[in-house]
Length: 500
Image 1 (cartoon, rainbow, N blue to C red):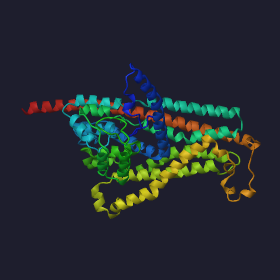
Image 2: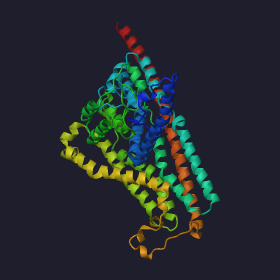
Image 3: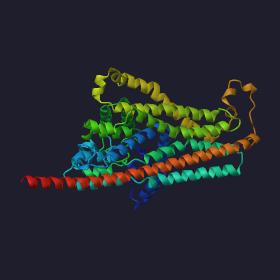
Image 4: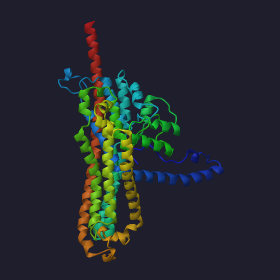
């Protein structure tokens, strides 16, 4: 999966420690071949279900990172001081400030809290303004480490679109078949994963920290479980501490064996904002006002994130609702509960990102903000809101998928609407699977299917265009950094000669 992750379930190294030139090694190799496959299959299945359980936080945090990258890159369209350009863009940003900002764009997904080494500090020492050309090469290398949208996300999404087209064609050939319509609805529901992949493909910072670690040129050793637990309490937010403790207890290895650690997809926006707050440019009020996301921006991002979840759920719900007998039955109820859980998780994710950007001084000045960050309130939200939402999303995703695949949804109880559950004696269960009502509803199924196909194609194209736009602008900003730094150096030399 191209969607960023921190931990992985992988076969143990001793499973591949054998010599095929020996007879015993052949048996060990056969055992490794048989055992390693199921482990990787389980790992992939678990990760896919995790994405489907909480696509809202994935998409929201990814959109936050895209917005921050866009604002930094577009604001740095000209790095020269205003007295030489005639406008007030990038006031007071020297080459070092611009270098820090560009580094945050391509490395802002590396963890800086609860880790033994701070990648921002180490990269800042290496990517200095003393050798701009060398630093520019490193910046372009880190950008190139993130594979393009088409290579990672485009091809799998095209295959998914192809399966949509096949289902619609099958629906045309089997006019009025409710099983085909329900298969289409099930595919639309799982379209949430495709939207997560599209958003993750827009990001410029690669989840693989190997390039950044090689630039620093320092080795690393694997932290122990006790060290990971101790480092977990160094994180600021309660939800981040709980997450780190769960990671330590799981004893699962990191996806990449490097000096630095990437963050989860659902915290990438928060991590990028944390990187920007540690730059020298952020200390300047005029810069912070241009980059910081306001209340309207947070609401807009949360709304877009939920729309990318709501549209697939709404289309799937509509098909299931229209399938005779029309009404809310098991499948509709499953999708409805899932959508409510995603709305809750998206709001909580937005709240986590917003409060993560508050400065400690604001906590001291405003009593209400300070109360909202208290420990007891954090644990209360986790226990009473976050955990139930995760549980509902988990149950609806896993059981809903399992009952769809195994055919449990085809039982008599799920063949009637919820309004008849309380009085089943007056209910008539349809035994045939192909009726006149199904044929009349077939055109509506097709229209909803085409709407979902068009929406998915638009989201995919927008994702590709966004990443291509940001990549080209980032490369141009790196070129500007070298060109303007050379200009400043030449001007400084001429000034020194004239003074001398």
